[in-house]
Amino acid sequence: MIRKAETLVQSEKKIRILIAGYPGIGKSTLALSAPNPLHIDVDFGIDRIEPRYRRDFIQPKTYDEILADLTPENVKDYDSLVFDTGGKLISLMSLWAIKKDPKYSQRDGSLSLKGYGFVGKELMDYCFYELQKNIVIVFHATEEKDGDNTRLRIKVEGQTKNNVWETQDLGGFVEIYGNDRTIGFSNCERYFAKGTRGISGIRKIPALGPTSPN
Image (cartoon, rainbow, N blue to C red; front, top):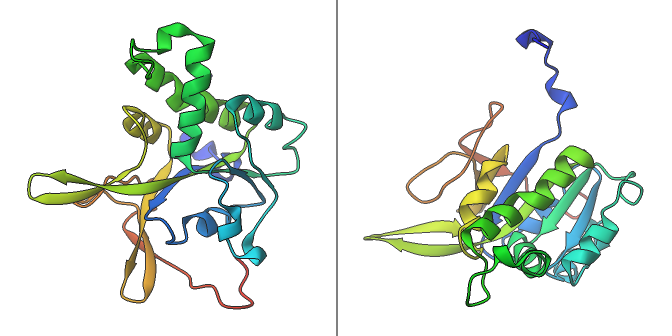
C-alpha cells in the first residue's frame, strides 16, 4: 500500500542506538537514561554504576538465558532494552550460533563470515521488530592504527564490528573534552559514527549532580 510521506509519525517508531567509549567514561549510565530500561548486564558490571542510576537488570551467562528472559511477557513493562556490553553479548551469541549450526564455524572453532552476519542481526531484529523495544547497545572502544593516525573503533571480534552498525538509527562515541563529556554522531577522521533524524555533530552530555535524574 502506498502511503503519503506526511502521514508518517516518527514517535511511533522505536530507536536503535549504539554507544561506544573507553571504560569508566559513563557509557552505561548514559545508556540507562533510555526510557524505562531493562539492563541486560552481560558484563556483570552493574556494581560500577552509582546505585541511584541502576535499573532492573538480568545477568545472563549464556545466550540461551537471554532468550529465556527476553520474552514478550517478561519485558512487557519495559520500553527499552540496554545491552551492556555488545562485545560480551556477541561472544555469548557466537558460542550459541556454532552449537546451533556447524556451518557458522570455521575449522579452528571461530565464527565464519556467515556466522558473523548471523549473530550481528539475529537478536537485535527480534528485540526491535517482535518485542518492539528501543534498543541501546554499549561497546567498549579500542584504538586501531591506520598509518600515522590512531582511530577509535568498537571493541568486538571479527566482522561483527561492521555488521552491528547497519541496523542502528544512531551511533556515537563518548569522549571527554576539557571538563565536559560529549557524544559524537557524525563520521570524522577519529571514528565512525551514525546520525539520523536531525541528530548529528558533537553533543554535550549533561552533568549529573547529587539530585539529578538520569
